[in-house]
Length: 127
Ligand code: HEC
Image (cartoon, rainbow, N blue to C red; front, side):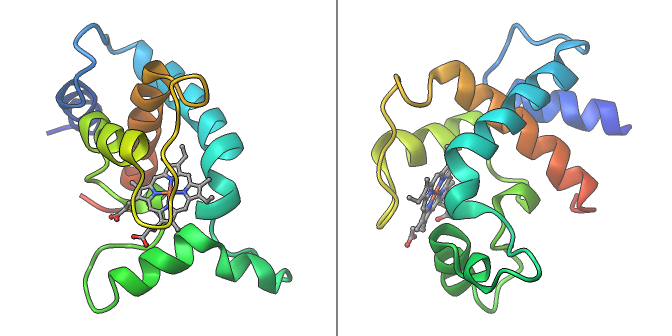
């Protein structure tokens, strides 16, 4: 399977049936924007030189939750965060993560986030 075929199947499995190949980069770019505004404050990677960022609540909680497994603490490295999976977590919240209203993160934003994670997890070398 080529990378594009993998991307397409991830995107289509995510429930975005109207997606066509040309939409993948656009959706992923839009998803990156949503991630940086809505998710990165809690889920970004720790940045060298700023010790506080090594302990962002999302990254830190997931590092502890998945300790001893192969599941990465960083959302951008995960291959399992498809649109339906993200929708459950984001609409209902998850332990210390609050739920997001549709006015904060829309359904289209969630589809774009799934496209973004599909691209970043491939770039991180996970299959
Ligand atoms: C206010 C901080 C905060 C923000 C903002 C936030 N999260 Fe979270 N998120 C958390 C925390 C903390 C957890 C871990 C909850 C737990 O299990 O203890 C978490 C867990 C998750 C999980 C569950 C993963 C798992 O395997 O349990 C997903 C998926 C997730 N976040 C996605 C997102 C996305 C996508 C965004 C942006 C739209 C986002 N989060 C924004 C704090 C945040």
